[in-house]
Image (cartoon, rainbow, N blue to C red; front, side, top):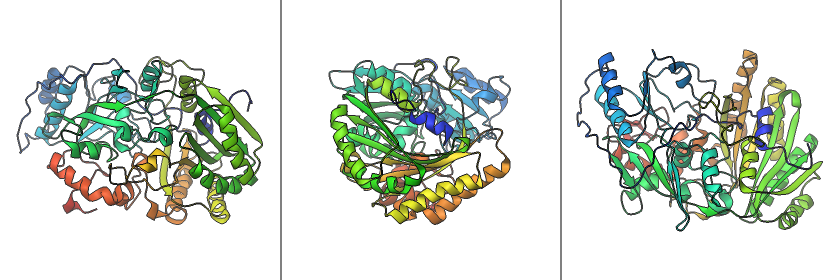
Length: 530
């Protein structure tokens, strides 16, 4: 690694986790959404269905939409049906609607309700569980991608289909930032609704903490605005209650922040020092100033070997960060390689996104945008939280778990990546928003990834490894992050939402009484149990 610039997290994860370069979705056009826009479609109030949609019914829906409706006989269908995660190869919706405005969304909701077919919202298409698709109608909002900013009030209005690289570019060019994730093609909708953790979270809060209001089409096919003054319960639920549960969002209004001075750092360690690194990192990260976010990785990179690393982003100058890092150096082992350097905001976000050296246009998914160069990836993941410092023994157990993955599946990449919480994230009360994980020191994401050439036996070994982690290594009482949604997690309602689950179920019944927005891990109704 050159000492002149850090090796970006996404490059490392391409070698290891291989999920960081992109997440599905791309911007195709834009439509301005203002407070004065109205849904002109008058929805049906039918409570009984018309039966499965016929070819002529689909044709009528297509004729009523401003955006295109893609059916299986369309040559674009095969590519358009894909999600980012390449493991989801058997998803075959009856149609994909590229909605050009909120009225299109309302017509789609009404159509699916009237004909009794499944409905799924898709923004970036990054759902870890594949829940951005379904057997019925996929409502794709990627064309609702406009981004506007009022620098006087520091309020940004962002279409639900905007992807992070475009949000960062549009705001950053005007000296503002929205704290969010790092993957460039994640859709803003799913990220926000599930929480939204990123490199500025400790300083400015989660993405959902910065949400002022949203416009959303609910199960009665009407668009409403949820704010502190109107439908405040729905706004509360939308701050971390998970995507696709209450309706289909069409736009968001966020509080944004002036861009501070930014410094990146990266310390690498010998693999033998990984347990001591992890043991020292947790209390150091928890006690760091709010301006510092950090990440600790213990990975197997397949043929590239192992990686033990601490990296992060600091809102301030390198000279101040040097003093903070000195404490980590005193408490932990000595790194073999160090980098500390200042960056402009957009350059820093490009590094975090794995897009260093690329244009904004190139930092999109190639299958969704002809200018994009980023590729889809295949992976599986599981998450947990850490709510107390680790002993050396516990840290060694975590490191040994990564070594076990390498032994069982030596060609796949994977391991553990821990993101620091604390700061503004934990300053919010656990019941103030739907996002309940306000006492954690860090979130752990365990991931393994593979390519088309990976042997099926190694893929199966990776799946067994994740299952073993969940049963024997992770602490199930700490919960799991809903944006790393996990189809294998048995106790997912309480793991994702904890003591906020009851209120979320009440709001679900209020805004979606017929459970139109339903998937394997949607907010359950009380009679379904939790």
